View 1 (tube, rainbow, N blue to C red):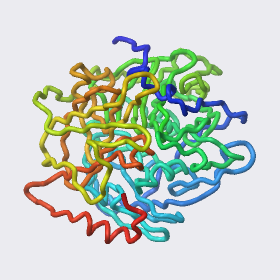
View 2: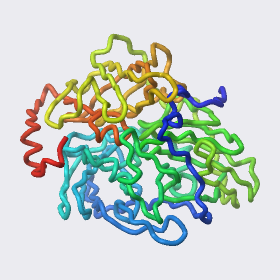
View 3: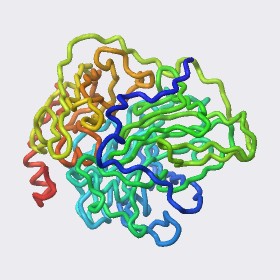
View 4: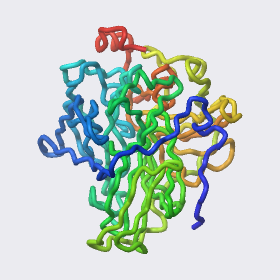
Length: 488
């Protein structure tokens, strides 16, 4: 297996070339134990149905040394618990809005009906109100996440702290050889960045229409984080949960990062790297092998050249190393044909558009039958000169896709699995193989959060020809959004 030692993507379009770029600094605080989200407990389980209640709420969180920071979170003051779903089960959720403004619950990575269950902008919950939703989970083992989607306020609500890890387990494709003990050898790394103003976050003060950046890195809401490794094989579920910042993850000792999964589940084969770059909303599951490290040893994970997490080797309590199969997952990729859908991402700042249009909640921009594989051509017309263009991360709700090619060439080595977010370089055409398995209205957009809030977003109807639905989106908006300021 070839060891990859360089980042992918066009370096000339990296975010640090932007004139408004903020370099990360290491805060002058003590080391803090990495926060591990608790696992959400079910309200009850009846037969094949699991009941959960999720509150969006305000709170105070001790992040820096000293004064607490005013934050938002799910079932807590910041971020949220791990929400586990098992494929083949039915779920009933009560979503409670304890915030002072409207919000939604978007299940990023779940293949569930839209627009209500999916939790896009058509499914608002007013302050002091709640919404009941139900859906089946039928998809592979994968790492997803929950975040708000009340456009045009998605970016600010994520900035305030609304995000939570989600894990789907499917017994048919799960790999028992992998570390599975949550918080011990299976941990999340939710990467974000914030600027502190006297220990507080001020989104309006830091706002940038091209993507808001902070100067301090957080992992799971922790600054200067440290985690003690007690088993030789460590599984990291990495999410770039930042509004804008690209995560270029590396380490001080160039430890081998073995990537086993991307957004939509396991890769066909493991990929070994010493560096990995994730754009906004992308996920990667990686394994680190500490078997050659002695107690007291340390590995420092960095974003670019700034430390974000120290992994301190402790006493190994058991040997959890297992031989992985050479093929992690069988994925059929032999598809040919011409694209039947086109997405052109263009512009920066307030000129961002998809196919020359701004998002309209009452307009359906495209249609595709469920159960059919169709090829999409997604392009980025930005200039490729350093500082003149940017990488746009393209995200689709309600489905996972395969990356077929980049400008007619093979995808990057870690892009051969299913994904829901793909980064597109300036001047590049990326071909995707897309199949919807559930019907509904779904968004597709740039996942730089300020871009989607500005209107760099469109929507598709996934049509079930055997059970067609008529969507009157204007009536849906009138019913759910009495305040016109909540619409786009």
